[in-house]
Image 1 (spheres, rainbow, N blue to C red):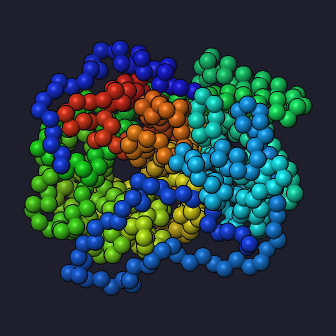
Image 2 (tube, rainbow, N blue to C red; image 1 turned 90 degrees about the vertical axis):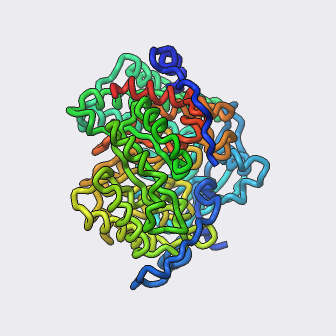
Image 3 (cartoon, rainbow, N blue to C red; image 1 turned 60 degrees about the vertical axis):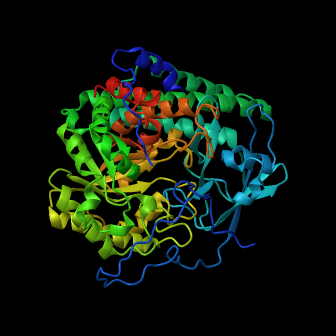
Length: 576
């Protein structure tokens, strides 16, 4: 459902949303494969971080681990099979390669889709969100066969294009029971039935167990009734092609109703909040903000006009003074921090962002960097994101990334350094949701949590931030489930929507939203939808820190873009 088309025209026509006046421009300088669905998260793995000299920092830790931590050996287990068929939007039955292409990223066009593994399709035993360790997608007569080891029954999730919306991560699970050996399914039907049931479950949850309870509008009620009607009609079709098209139509209705429900419930949650100051709406100022230092006042003024009350401020890698011992290293930030705090904008500081971690980073070096930044800004910056997407497989560089155990050790040292400086300071860890597209279960969000919660993840931690990047990892109807599962695994922690974005430049490489050719419209829709939907989640303080603020909202000419105006009016609609 295109929220942008319903709201943005009114937003841009409203008073007080014109672009800024134009001051001088800114000068910015045959066993089953264990490598499951992943593709490179290109922006995060694009380069190798600079390697600072840590020789002057004492270290008592073991050398940095290379690559992912070793997994336990898996004994021989019975192999099972699930046969799948699928149809495209015109009702044409897809063969194996066509099915893979149908659920693939944009940058897979012209490539052999069979070389991309499971193409985002993931396998789970019922009752868990941790992926099965071994599965493979193979060609079969008239379709495909999913082969797995281990669990007797499985559920599956996969990226799926939905007319009028775009790619969503969807589930198929046979009414929750899962599929067994030699079952055969038509994906269009199973996905629509599963998502419809999940929508109704979420609707009841929002009405009965969530505070404030969701108040259904007439429009959403009609959308829900239409989805029910279309599901029933699709079940009456007997011709396979007609049946697939009918269930696709029903799935589109399910998706539209779900988005409308989430958006409305977000508005209602913000309206009912006892203090809106406790809710966070933010933008990211990435490390390139250092080049904007001469224009810090304009950046802060424009930030204030956006309606955002939080800034996610990323410190530059600074390899020549990694620990921030030199007074000169603070020159790029002092004025900006002062200007933001002067305007009542709170800051969540990120000492070292996800793509900046060098391969040679040690816990001691990270703690020293955090400590020195705290000495400078701890009186004004009270929130510290010491764990940036720490379940990613790119921290330390793409060639030889740090192992998950080493990353956890470094994160823990950073969190301890914050609490040692002042126990009242807030610590934040951002986790990257990519559970269908991650290269292995170990780096998936829920697989990572299952391993590191028993090892102490949560100690010295106040807030968990969830990073959603729908171009690389389709979200759509999965939004509520992502937050709910994180809350259930970390019941004592506050949640926020962290970094989110769509298409770093202007050419789609991953999964499309709304329209593959309308990147700008998709960004606007996601800003409106995510900022509202994040507020309707359990234990959530809202959030939403658009990643490419300095590329897509603030321009070097010191103008603002239409995306900035939509963001601003979206917060106005939320009552912020």
